[in-house]
Image 1: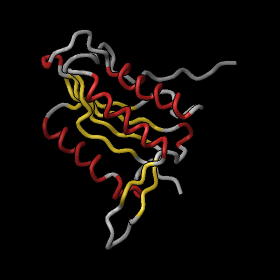
Image 2 (image 1 turned 135 degrees about the vertical axis):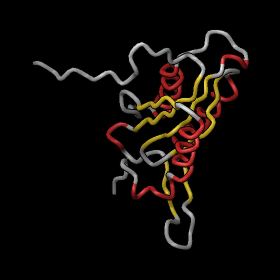
Image 3 (image 1 turned 90 degrees about the horizontal axis):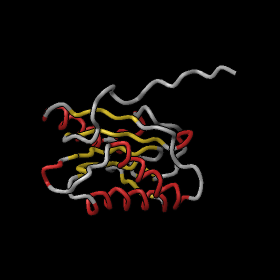
Image 4 (image 1 turned 60 degrees about the horizontal axis):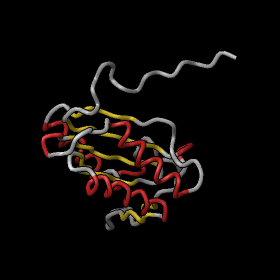
Length: 159
């Protein structure tokens, strides 16, 4: 049986362990709504993100990255019902040797939370975007910040 060839998702010949900011989106397996519920949507109420138990573990693992690595931080994140957005900053000037590349950071988060969940939680890969400048960073930061309020307009929204 001839299976279709997977397209590479990373930029060819780019060192994903070098200093920079990266926008990462990770989706749950089959885009199942497992991570949170968004409530209070409407004209008068700001939406609230109510994390499920596995959503709380995902938040712990994201925050662990900030505490565990001197040279890596998650500067912004949003846990949505079926996906996770993060801005991951790699800055080797802040100390620490052997900076792991982006895919290893994401793999660690996915591995830990899958083990806690006890079965397949995430899709195989993830989407990344290399943040090019301050304007790009602010646009993405705002997108993540307002994502819960725009859940029903989100490309990952399912009813």
